[in-house]
Image (cartoon, rainbow, N blue to C red; front, side):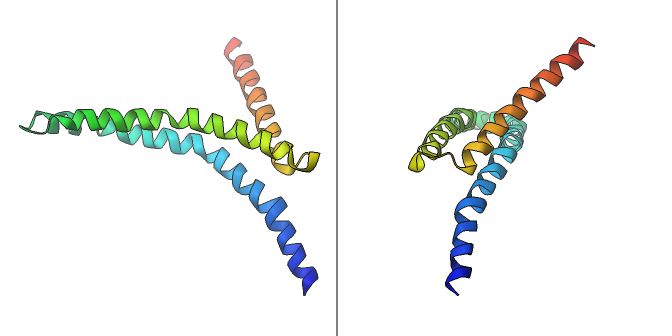
Length: 121
């Protein structure tokens, strides 16, 4: 029984955590784009609502919401740098999350290179 529990704990620690981080890192740009698209699509409604007497703060609130969504990228970058440093220092060894972030950076560089090659053609 203890062997099964220790295997389950190892899987949760070393596999499920990095996998969840990878999934969030993979789908975050799509979520960001979708939320930004919805907010921009609702701008005409906010502008019309601001024309209604006494509701001039609608544009101010819309602007605050839009800026907060635009700051997601800055927060994600800070969180990624923090996590990469934290996971690489655990017990002086590199973990799976470090390899996952390194692989994501390599994939992004390769995609940029392919995009540049296709744009030159």
